[in-house]
Image 1 (cartoon, rainbow, N blue to C red):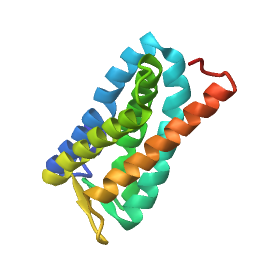
Image 2: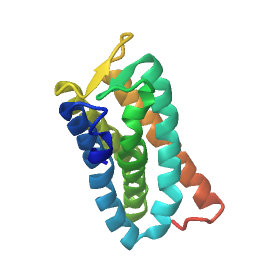
Image 3: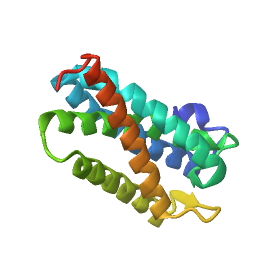
Image 4: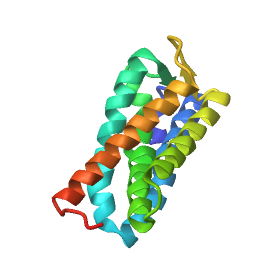
Length: 166
């Protein structure tokens, strides 16, 4: 891929894109593949809804409130590795832990939201994420909490129709 981009992008920009692909897609799917080997049904059913929610929120967010680096003419393109890697894998792990541990759902949702917000906070601190239009880390926390509630709601529907077993 780097060879294909060589004539069009600076070395620094190619490296930024490569970091996004490695950290946002490849590394998460290494863990996603491990989860798939343990519980394929969870990854097959939950990752697509995780991707869908990620695409919707990031499409909205990159137009009004935040931007990932490096930027492109199509602003949402910067989030692509995260949308198809990090977020669907985390969504799958959320449901895996919900099925495995019969503990407090609110605490689980809160922990996943806190982890994801912390991850984005690190991106903010190192300049990989930029906020605008008065967006802040609290808004980020709320948006992740909403996303995880949507994933959990979908999981509840899968249980109701016995597509997933509790």
